[in-house]
Image (tube, rainbow, N blue to C red; front, side, top):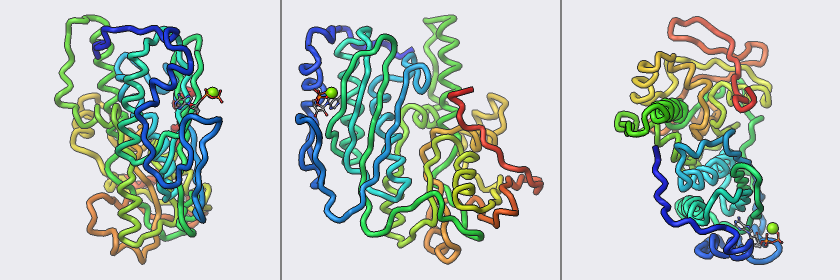
Length: 347
Ligand code: ADP
Ligand code: MG
């Protein structure tokens, strides 16, 4: 359904490895004062003075994490950076650099990699991070992308998963389930397209959720906002696998229980209507959908007045003693033990 706009197909072998790296990375500019040496030497050199350094890596594999039949390469490049920056922000840190490594088969022309790198460049620009290195190699089958994100935190502002205390409030940013429902719509349109390639999909009613899937954003703004509001979460994680599994991570690592209130889970109207259309329960989607890249954190009750009026935040529950267990309190006010359905890539 997404047309191959690249009429021109330059073989990667025409450039050679060094020519390719040079071609793809020539536009990257250094913006961070902590970047002493970027691309071009045997290693990058970074100087964080007295700050602590945060490092996170993700590996994305074609056919497992993305499907190029509906994921434009530019979006893929953007998303592969975003998912890593999200992990850095989840530490309450500032992201400063990324490295990008790719393994690519010769079925990809240069023009395809240019698209991928255009997305990487856009993300680096918007999120103000430097691309300081990577590796390039060939692959016998699909495309692999590994991004490492580097960030910094000063003093003792980093936030781990393990600091939640009983009675802390559980807070989530934005809304949930959109990325997963966007994927459902794209998968459906892909099947329709297979049957009738002339059938152009009408994605208009699904703009928001499709964008949540194809062009997610990381919540850099929240890290700044929390700082401005003078709120340091007691624990934090990003929502990549789904609310359920992230709550379980916070609880397990902090040694707490939790009551999550179903009627407080933030859902966009488009998620609700698409769930109705697909006949799926929207709470199930918010709990297990994943890829929303929102931030989930806990705060001490004394900080509640500072976040109360802000539309970015939804208080969705509170932490309890470990012995109380981890529950979803439904709209009917029954309590159901919360289970993780993450690891969908292995199922
Ligand atoms: P080496 O042989 O030491 O691994 P390379 O030729 O792979 O060196 O890399 C040369 C420079 O280009 C290094 O700075 C490296 O980090 C950078 N680089 C290589 N591949 C990529 C890529 N895909 N994206 C960004 N930078 C890259
Ligand atoms: Mg190399």
